[in-house]
Amino acid sequence: MVRNRHLDFFCRLSEGLEANLHGTLPQGAYERLTQEYDNLRAALEWSALREGDALLGLRLAAALTDYWEMRGHLTAERAWLEALLVRAGQMAQLPLRAKALRSAGKMAYYQCDFNAARTRFEQSLAIDRQLNNQARMADTLSRLGFLFSIQQNYASAEPLLQESLAIFRRLDDPSGVGRVLSELGYLALRQGAYAQARSLLEESLASLHKPADQYLEARARHFLGYTARLAGDYAQAHKHYRRAALLLKGMCNTWGLIYLLESFACLAAAEAQWKRAARLFGAVEQLRKTSGVSIVPSEGVEIEKAVASTHRELGERVFAEEWSAGRSFTLDEAIDYASE
Image (cartoon, rainbow, N blue to C red; front, side, top):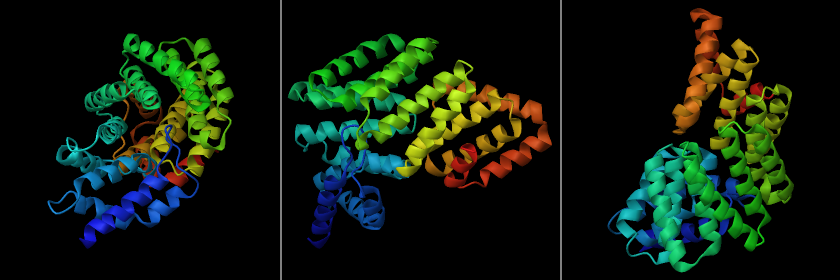
């Protein structure tokens, strides 16, 4: 059928442009996929129908997950992936099923649906262990360990991250090593061990020197800025946040930029720059609403305290004015304002 040939073409195109193991798209992939997005949507919608090829649809959806993160399109896209897993998952060969389950876990994680993310990651990991796919095992162990860190289940996070790190070292994958070191750094900072966190994150950056490592560098920089902010070193926090913003903006990574904006807002509140904080929090609220990106619960208490302090210091009228001004920002405008 013509529609299935159309689906096959765009499945192959997307697989040729999908991100590497660590979430970095090839040069020009974001622009090409954005250019073809109407065709990609049509292909996915067709694959979900009875006449469509569900296996091709599952391959297409699994290949697009990191692009969807960068674009900030999560809700409808996650629903497509989950529907195709139900329809085609049992027919899929094990490597494809493991990949699709891992992709579904990532989409659930991006929306802070952590119970669903954990289930999908654990299902994917079980298959990868069965297949002895070492690289994919390391990837999923890292994602599952980081998920536990976010949920403040630190005792469960540590051994998973250490297992992932050991595998990446055996595979001689410096990008993977740098990625997991940054996640161990985040684990340390969430437990208040700021010196240990800084050491791990700086070691992470030393491993991330390839052009394809820019996303991982941005993530490590964000965590270093977070560590500096919690330790009261606001100048260093600004430095790392600005570098992360430059990298993420260059990659058009919507999800990462919104998360970073929240950190800029908390930094402004910590420095008692109340109007700036209110405006940035307003921008984050609106951008989260339009993209479907949720607040990480473990960081929500800190954010709520910062918003409450900002509200109290400014008073109702000024707070509302600044919040409203922030809500009018585009993502680019908000990032430019935050980076000033």
